[in-house]
Image (tube, rainbow, N blue to C red):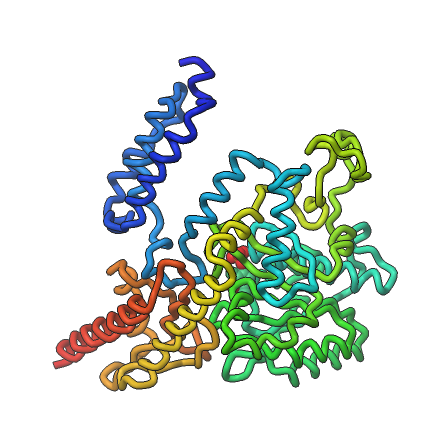
Length: 491
Ligand SMILES: *Cc1c(COP(=O)(O)O)cnc(C)c1O
C-alpha cells in the first residue's frame, strides 16, 4: 500500500455517508449497553500497535462493527444524568465541516467570521448582548478565563500585573456553597489558591444568601484582603438554582468587585419567559459563561466566556508575539490591503484565552441557530422545564415520593420514601442503580441538605415528556419492588 492510498485524499462523501448510516443505526439504541458485551469488544479492539495499516475500508468496517455498537449511553433520549447529552445533528455536521475545511479558527475566512457572529448571536439570545466573547473547550476553561480577567483587573487596580508578575498577596473569590468546583480549580490554576474561594451559605432553595455575602465582604474588607470576584450561579449543577442576580449585582457594584455569572448550564433558561425575572441583574455582569455543549446540544468541547471588554482578556492571556506567527502575517492587522485570507489572523482569539491551536467552534452555534432559530431553543427549553415541573408535581402528589427542592430549571431532585424502610439514602441509591442497569431512563443522584436525591436533568434535544413520565413510573415500580422484598425478608 502506498502513502497516497493511506492518506485517502478523496472519498470524503462515500466515507461520511457510510459513517452517517452507522450513526443512524447507533441512534436507534438497539444494541444494549456496552458492558453487556465487554469481552467481545475488548478482545477485538485489544490489538498490538499496527505496523501495517488496514486502509480506509478496513478502518470503516472496524468502526462500524467493533466500536460504534459499544459506545456511550449519554445520547439516549432517556439519559438525564449529569448535565450532558447527545449532540444535535446540525452541530455535528457543522463541526465536521470545520474539521475538514477550517482546521484553525484564525485567518480571514468564513469560519473565523462565524466565530464572532455566533458569539454575538449567543450573547444576544442569552441576554448579555453588552458583552464580548471567546470560545474555549467548555465551562471549566470558560470559568478559568473569566476569573483570569477578574484577577487581572483586581490586581491592576493596586498596581500589580498578575499576568507578568504573578500575585503578591492573598485574594478572595466569593461564591455560593453550591458553586461548581471548577471555580476552586480556576483559582488554583490562577495562583490565588483554591482556599481563596469563600463559600457563602445558601437558603432552602439553594440560592446564595446575600446577607451572608455582605458579611463575608465586610469582614475581609476590614482585614485588607483583596477581593477579586463574586461568582453567582445562573443554574447550579446540583439543583438548577439561580442566585439572586440583581441583589448580588448591587452588592458587587457597591464594593466595586467583579461580578461573574456561571451560566454554564442554566443561562439559556432565560429563553423561558416564565423565568425571565430570575435573570434580572445579568445585564450588570462583568463576565458570564455558558456552555453550548450543555443545554443547547452542541457536541462536547465548546464553552463561551463573555466579558465587557476583551482587552482585559488580552492583558491576562496574551500569547505573546512569536516570529513564526506575527511574522507570517503580512498586513499585521492593518487590514487595508488584505488580499489573501492569510494576510491577517482575523479576530485574535488565541490572545483572549488559553489555546493557540483550536478548532473553529462557533460554526456549531451558528448552525444550530440557523436550523431552529431562537424560537426552536425557546420551545425546547420550555419543554425541558415542563418536564422537571411534571416530575415535581408527581413527587408532591404521590405518598411514596418526596420533592426535595422546588425545581427552577430542568433539574428536579426527588426521592422515594417508605415507612417500611429505615435508610432512605440506601433505598434511593438502590433504585438509582437499578434505573441505570435497566438502561431506559438514566438520571444521576446528588445530595440535597444531606439527603440522597434522584436527580434528572433534562437537556437532551431528543428527550420529551414521555421520558419524564417513564422515569417517575420506573422509580415507583422499582421502589415498590425493593420495599416489598425487604418487608418479605423481615417476615
Ligand atoms: C458543567 C458546569 C461547569 C463545567 O463545565 P464543563 O463544560 O463540564 O467543563 C461549570 N459550571 C457549571 C454551573 C456547570 O454546570
